[in-house]
Image 1 (cartoon, helix red, strand yellow):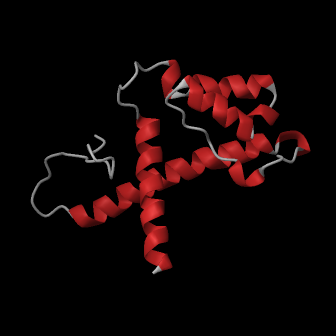
Image 2 (cartoon, helix red, strand yellow):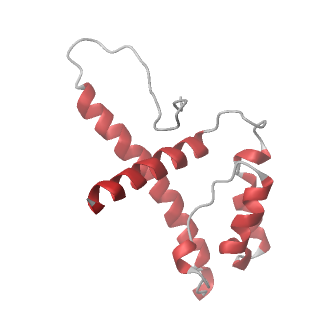
Length: 127
């Protein structure tokens, strides 16, 4: 579940004594990061399909939009350059198309946790 302060996801389960919880937490974090990376790789491939070059390559990432307004803004970045069929495929997996407003959804959780982690890492490396 996403923490109230949106600083992380808490996975709660019972584990027998002796399980390497610290190692598992690192593995789970890596898995979440890899999921996000896979989605972004998909977006990169879509943006470059059929030899195309996106106008704003640095803004190419898999969109995760919780509202139709966020989606419309995201389309302006690079999605609008995709064929309509690919735009539709990206749109139907967006949480706002199937989850009630405010409902928990996995994609926004993954996005928010990684955005926060990346921002914290950038602040640490800037010191």
